[in-house]
Image (tube, rainbow, N blue to C red):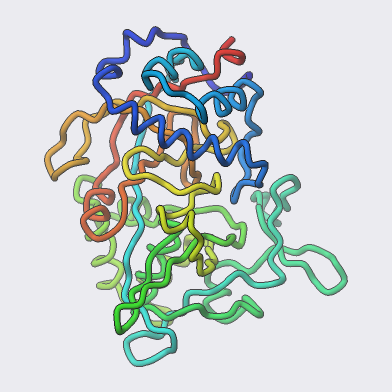
Amino acid sequence: MSFPSVDLRPVAFETLAGFDADDLETALAVFRHSAEQLLSGDPAQRPACPPPAGLIRAAQAAMSWNAAPGTFFRRWFRPFHISGPGFVTAYYEPEIEARLRPEPGFDTPVLARPADLVTLNDGPLTSSAGERLTSARRSVDGSLTPYPDRAAIEEGAALGAQPIAYLRDAVELFLLQVQGSGRLRLPGGETLTLTYDGRNGWPYTSIGKLLIAQGRVPETEMSLARLKSTLRDLGLTKGAPGLRLMQENRSYVFFRIDDSAMRRLGPIGGAGCALTPLRSIAIDRALWCYGLPFWIAARVPWEKEAETRLERLMIGQDTGSAIVGAARADLFFGAGAAAGGLAGRIRHNAEMTVFLPVDDAS
């Protein structure tokens, strides 16, 4: 297994401070979620690099492993430190109040995947400006053209995209799309669980970075709450600065209602399996395959607002348009407002070590 654009340095397990003290039983259980997906033959929700033969053998071994979990990882993997500055952010599953029909105060639709949207995993289009487009619109004659961007879709250009539900405003929808899944709370206590079901293929642009670059929010003060309040203060009506700023991110995500048994375990990541808080991470799918374990060490506010040491084994089970680079990870923090409050504050340097299968660690 080779990674031509990744600089890896072999290290010993003994150099990973805290490895033996980690809850490796839970880490192995989360790895088994990936193992089940790898062995099932089911396609990933968002395809990544193909798994090597060694990872498949490790997945097979995991399903019947009954010895110490630390022994499993030492037997089937070799750790390699990823050179260069590592960087982690975090995400969560939002819980958002919604309505099934538009009404005053709830008029922003969550759209289902339109029938004319085609995902281009192997042969992306190129825009007139040279951008790589990972989805397209299929016309009645079979030809492919760039799918409308966020601004156009908000004007009604996603033909046939049916509303699933309605949210309070464009900020709630935008953050739901950034997180990639969510739970909608309806009057009467009913909940709809949503899963990512494709995107329009345009490149992702970080609105948080734009706010910082424009001097609207100091980088040291950027958080999820600050992002939301700033966008709302700028205005969300047609043509208002807040809405125009969100439209700078031309990427647009579609959803589906998902009440499957797997979804009840947690939101479904790009690999196609349920995510586990503080054990599942999103990785760059152009560089890594799903199912690889990563040792992450950083000082982050992961328990409370104060920064404390986080050292644990996590599994690559998701991806995201903003997750680019070998030493780049997005940590899944769980569901709800508390998880979102912590996740929105994570923008920290980190040390990352990837575990490569023994047959491929060369």
